[in-house]
Length: 246
Ligand SMILES: Nc1ncnc2c1ncn2[C@@H]1O[C@H](COP(=O)(O)OP(=O)(O)OP(=O)(O)O)[C@@H](O)[C@H]1O
Image (cartoon, rainbow, N blue to C red):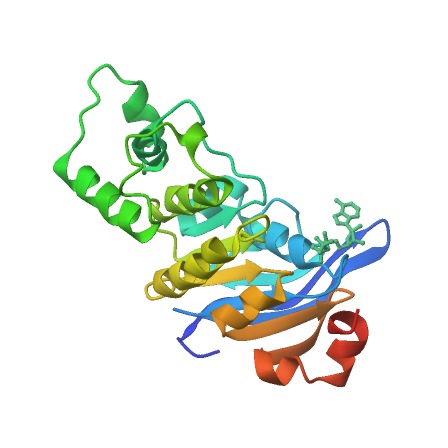
């Protein structure tokens, strides 16, 4: 594969009691790409992300990320290699401020914050300001995270991943439960953050997928049913049959 490829998933299979949730899958993501993965319930979307982040172990196949095979690494090593994953439910610290949540998520943050000698270095402060700007939370930096709206909490969690500077960011239904303006702001946010990293988004909200306007992969029964620009995919007979027509 070309040097442009950041992630190369080849012949990936996982069986749960003989049922192949991912079935001999080949899936490639380029650097600086924003890829949307869609498909009916049970298609294997979440399982694919679980395999990439090491939460689920593959039965066969490879997941090449830069020069590493992720199937051989632990979850912790995969994070360290530069893969960030956001789950559906936000896992922020509600009693801490937005700034403290970001500080805690910064590399080494967990140890420095608990230290008596924690100091805000100018570099960290500047990085937090930059991220707060990206996730639309500049005015909320010193506010308790528990007071944020549902959408703002999702953005904070994205910020908590961004501060670790992952090369690949994976998001599971980031706009679920968001208002229309929040959804539009999230589309703009994802398009901005993919400028220096790759992003994989699982999504059911077709309006949002159209807002993002990027390459779409349709999964069905653990395999790729179609792949390409949204306009092509949404006119594909097989995609309409198994997913969009419902
Ligand atoms: N740990 C597991 N043990 C057994 N079966 C599992 C496990 N994880 C997933 N599955 C099964 O694998 C299939 C794919 O599930 P997955 O959650 O990846 O689908 P999905 O495309 O993310 O669906 P949804 O849109 O509903 O989230 C489903 O049939 C599911 O029941």
